[in-house]
Length: 133
Image 1 (spheres, rainbow, N blue to C red):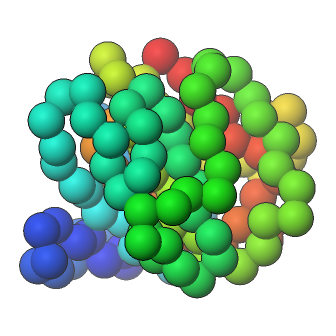
Image 2 (cartoon, rainbow, N blue to C red; image 1 turned 90 degrees about the horizontal axis):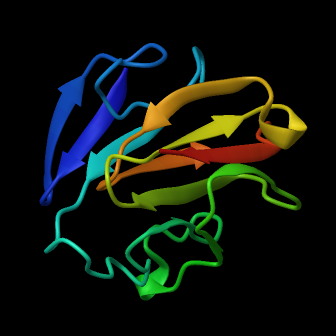
């Protein structure tokens, strides 16, 4: 079960793997908090520029609006030295999604994170992410 956070209020939603039109990234046995944050189209959110997927430092939540990693281009992006729980925020445009993957080069991917949503996820078993239109 994942905890959804919306504007400071918590609601509980059941999430297993991917929800076709949803914004759930996770695997069975991996607890992850998923939420949404809204801003005017084209705006920077918590330091994450419009059009990017941002990863924040370990156990830092929004880290005062200072992401540690930014990804703009579609395709696979390998991660290194990312362990523990990190917040990932999808601030892409046009419905572009993001996935976490256990393998390098975008293999073994799980779930989808839609634009305007974030997830707090243990990146220890994650070796890459993908961005797709």
